[in-house]
Length: 319
Image 1 (cartoon, rainbow, N blue to C red):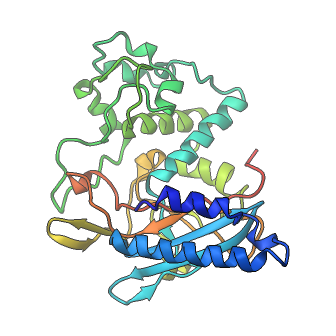
Image 2 (image 1 turned 180 degrees about the vertical axis):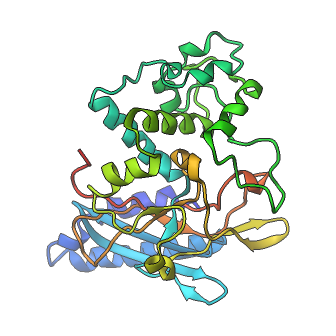
């Protein structure tokens, strides 16, 4: 779901950001502006067929405005509310980037190191443009290494198939059938396997599983206690949103839980996040989150439910 950039810029131009701290004479005008924007927002998500959605506006670490729309669960007609938890999907790639830069800051790696320094198995890929040792961490981090988009491009459309390869050795087994598609650094092209490589580097340098490292060094320092990997903790299940696909056959529900195990690094739907624990908490900030339907990729089994979610933060980043 894409909201009109023009509508959003119009809201910002009205000075909506300081809504929660506006002078008394400005408050009515800003509240009216937010009301108009909320109406535009709800109309946009309805027009796009999004089942449920939530949007928060944050200024100086405080939630200054919010709006929700639609359902978290169509079957029970449960509405989206301030406690709804959404899939993170590929926003988890942001956490992978944070982790890599943390290791850079701690002197564990350089962004210009060749990936094969940490993953010698990658030498098995076919690189018609040179040697795989010329592919750097900077390339894979910036989606400019030349690797394909999908992790598993060869089927997986049966109900009994795994969602994707769940172990690193399965990923390595694909290397002899993998080729670099363009000279590294020459262009940008979104790649899920590239981010898996980063996750494997994180695990090898730290000795932690990827999700353990992120929980200890990103989520907990930011007090993101309602963010988690894979299956929902029992005490949060009632807040979980469902996810939906819209395709030629109509609207259908996606998987509720994903066991991605070895492939968490790139951000498939084992990620859940909750942006705010209590109203007005200045330690959380949130971006737009959407739980709902969109047109899936050509092979709907090759990607998780089409959901984005908020990134809750403190004012200061994890150190």
